[in-house]
Image 1 (spheres, rainbow, N blue to C red):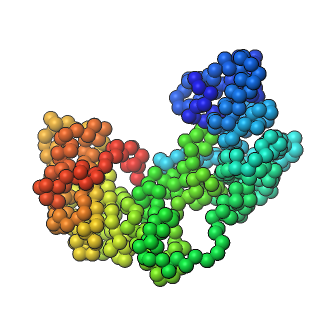
Image 2 (cartoon, rainbow, N blue to C red; image 1 turned 180 degrees about the vertical axis):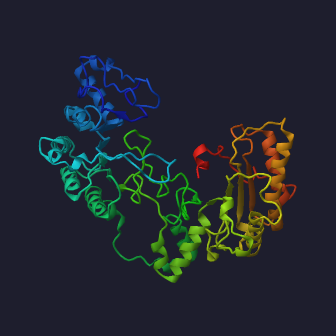
Image 3 (cartoon, rainbow, N blue to C red; image 1 turned 90 degrees about the vertical axis):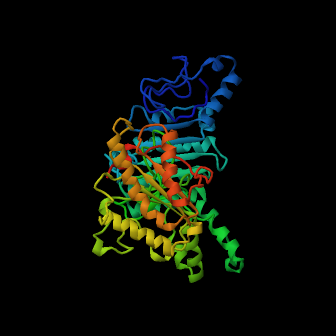
Length: 492
């Protein structure tokens, strides 16, 4: 095995052996340093017997190129870090420390929950001989052996729940040179007072916000409008991922967002145990800062607001996860109450360029029948699109993914026929657009957990051509496929 690995090395269990255990004749053991149990990655020790200089070079490579994590409440934890020698201290570049805090459970849950161990508010832990003393020793060693700025990347997950305890653990960071990256999460839950202290430390140790602030006045509105729009496309107005509207959040959030608060997933490492989301935790990461709807752009001036709205709605892809319960009674229908349109204010219609409606709810033979509320909702939505959207520049995308997870069984011909008839009912109102769309893409996930084959492609193509014409080729137009939805996508 190479000295450099693509997983995080957890040094929190076993004996604190320092840089290398000459007694065990191997370098660092960890049973769960990579996915899968009972896998024990052993690092080669041959280089450590060639000569002193080669041994030192190998250790420098090992500590400078790998990611490490240390957990106080699991085995030796921080003492493994504090026992490192001169070469380890001077070569260390990326590490994460978790000290008595909650776990973030992952994207399947709608909120972050945890089992916080608020041990950092225990006075004995804040004494010099306790946990704080070990942390101070670690920061002192780092400051002694690393003098250059922008070398270290630190992720600190700290269970401090009071100003006193958090200040005690942030203070040793001041001894370090300027950090390349710094992510801090304090627990056990969001606290605005602690967030201010946390952000001040991150600013001081990374200069992040001062680097972002550019002096002087730039006459942005004197530029040609085309150039203004182009510049705004590189701002936070354009999300890093498609924006989803899920029924329970009532607002657009980035695809793959952790707990509906942000897209702040930092690294797939063991120590993180979730997100750095400031909407849920007292946290901030300079590596992956959260994306949020940039409302301040709309407050600058009327001109800037108009430009910002155009960029936001025209350059992002919007995904609507439709549920039958979202559609109102027929008599109460308005664009604002529509299960398909309620996420888009009327002023956005002329700007929208790509919307993807996903049907994950239990579509069956009783849905989308004539005069059903969801049918009327869908027909009215198509009417609004035909009248108010910029159709030549608009891409409509539909994912037909029944909630009943079944595989394709050609022997069940009646079931197959009912499903195809249902999809016909969904597609029929779209024909009123008369092929004026820029593009129309269909994803038929009826054959869940089955590979996409010629049959599936043919079915999708038939539906697409009913709207766009007999010569339309969605693959040539850039249609892309994603894997079928996972089980948690159906977890309402």
